[in-house]
Image (cartoon, rainbow, N blue to C red; front, side):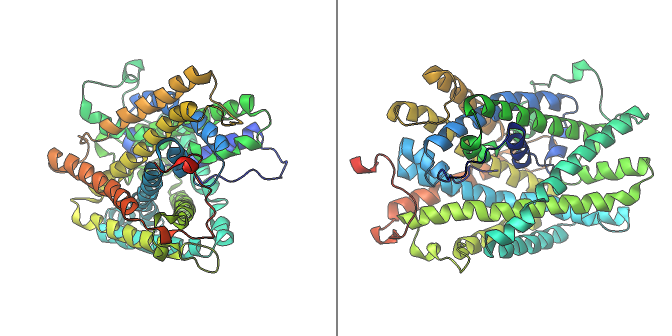
Length: 492
């Protein structure tokens, strides 16, 4: 779910097919952990998914493709934002990326812990265990530290875990969920949400509903991860947008149908952000007389979570290592082990996740903690996207002659339209994500908003302070991050 590190063009002449790239994007984007949040909206959830796909998913994909191919040097979002606005903001962007995934880990692991609870022999006990805060905390800590240990053993170790996890733990359960929903309705099952065209258009009069609706934008986050592969697609000007379209339709279909299945099966008043996905499988399997299959699905979901965690433990951390060696973090954080992995950055991340996980003890409920961490992670990610869209537009002016193997179609006006739409959509999602949700008890709205804004401001202040305090001897002579294009003309 994050802007990836770019790799230099290689000599490999193999090409990725349109369908192959589309599948890579679907696996990178689709996650089932947040479906219950949108099931609150019933049929109107489909409207939000389509809206977010058109105004966020497609702009992210096209803009990231231009940035990744135009600036293939290492750094990803650090490179893109730094080229446009200077090293300070490039460093802030990569730091926010690492902070965002660190904050999101407890959220994703909570989903995994709940899935693991449903592998037991007694459904009633499983459901009770899945709401136990101490169980959630211990499971989150255990799984994350195991994932960190796997990641620290290098690429060979974590790729073995991650290779099929996305398919086994996300795509197959999603397809099964959709099929079960269709079987449930076609066989006479009673829908728990009103049906009819009048239910498709959401109620815009209730601003507080937008807090959960805004999270749909983050469901599509990560499409930029595979933008670098645009160079491996034959005729990218034509085939890359086609792959994006296929991936957008595929991801949107899985998310829409999966969300609607939950709303069909689970009464709206009983939808729980952390348990409803497993309860949906449980209810439908019981209805079909196949309750024994629930633990199998639960295990598959746990596999998907572990694969995602291992992948994202390593990705942003190794990107930060490259930036650290370029002189942006003290030598303490530049240490690597025999596998070339950034052990101290990984350790710092693991400790941070452990501290955040304690929120599940002090918050009023597991669900409330889930919501706060989800929204904070979303705020940070949307800030990254705001920087990415602004950088793409700025670079059309500051570096107009830079070779871009892929360009957003339509010239400069096209970039303003596509990048502008993405920027405005991200800004609106950021603003609406601050609205306290009616569906969840998070205490005082003022305290809730203040907590989110205060935490985000504190996180942003950290890289700004580190940038000011950096020293020349922090730079590793063996660094592999190329200088910015403008650095020969003076620092920004």
